[in-house]
Length: 303
Image (cartoon, rainbow, N blue to C red):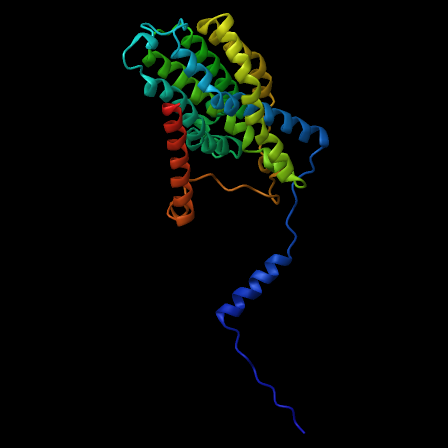
């Protein structure tokens, strides 16, 4: 008895699934291993970065309370002597600093990605020498050190300010943008160094915000009551230099950039995705974050 066989044509859908299944079986080169010492260094540097940036932003209300008091020696004339104190403008100093700390990632992250993955490498012979010299200066460490210097300069210039507009430019704009230059280059590559217990590591790092606010708030309050506003800002500028420069110098390189070879893993270029920005999940998250900030500002104005 003859056995009849039937040939089933392979459709495009089946062919696509076959290609995917075969590609899934190919081994993907792993990232180079990370020592415990390197992981501890990344944990400590990222924790201190969160404490210096987010921790300070969370305790700006101490400065705002001082600026509205009759014992302050920074603003002329004193807001406490006015019929309607400019509470909203004083609160906007902290809002501007906090907003720039987060919004700076739109500029900092793409720049860091292009630095580490060589997208700005010169290609022509005429610009190769100058390009290499510029690329030696354009490093994540340069950005973080510039951020620390900008933060220190902002607090120092704020100590010589006498109006709210000057505080907006110094304690608001300079400090906020400088903190962004320090925050993102240190925090962005931190999850890449942990293949196990990544959630625990990120929880420890993000706990630096609450820890920094818990420690900085009473210290700043004690300095304001003992040495005044101007010297508190100068001392805090020096503290940021002493604590921030070692952290900025030890900024970790992206683990993808460190382990990328011809056959190794390579990170895609950072870009702004319009498709992601149009998703309802992203829109709802952005609206929720906006409403959260508005509620915090309304609470600061009413308190």
